[in-house]
Length: 381
Image (cartoon, rainbow, N blue to C red; front, side, top):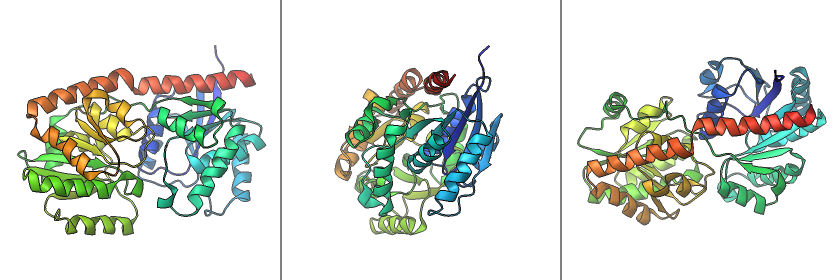
């Protein structure tokens, strides 16, 4: 009988982003007969905290990081927790957690796995610390025992910018097609809540309010289509900084979208969100593996996406792909779907779901991740 492997996963908090939801999928299906899992949080807060607490046989530890500049004391506390949990492997989840996983994990002489989930980040869109953090993360990557990247595009990008290439492997995100599936009742309920009738064709963007997600491009696209197709309505699902939300709302009103656009905010019941849509749009400037594209496809929603990260690979021939930062091309691609019959769009949606089931299942993601952890544990045995 194989011994249990003690695994600590370090992440910042439990917000409603795609990375956090992907971590939930991993934790739900990770083999608890093989792994003892502790999730170490910088801050025990976020919309998904209840989802994490509902997962059986997972311990959650609030490290209560005092501030951005809480460094040496935080490393000491992290080392203490690692030793207390007798962790063999420390899995960092995203940039800053990767850095602390290396510093504390190697101090405690443990195996460390980086979790990298982005590509082609434009640091000019963020504060001055973002670029510094990235350079530190890249430098320290040579000390990681393994680097899990969720997209081939991300691997190529980070390798070209100093990440240790021999440590990197691609494990695409996994989509739970049992949870994300067509549901007419959820569709009707959500559209009713949003004030969208059965006669409307609903086009949606699902993303946190962040410059990298391309909300201004989506809004400009919506303004073009709003003038051409009176039956269309639009929805933006996700939240973010209040000042950015106000900026986007002002832009939408200036573009004449006040009566045709719903700002839905953060939603926890994501299957109902996708089921309510007729067309899904991703307008991002940068992605690794986009969960929301895969989830929409699993709900049989045809997608129009920008050619960033692995988005084009995810949709394959079931959707449309355009260059980023080009609202006219985005509008033209969505127009193709609008001009199709409902039956033709539905057929594309069924093909999209089949592609997710065959190529990007959550079972494949979990199995590949477990294999990585087991191989590292065997090296320490």
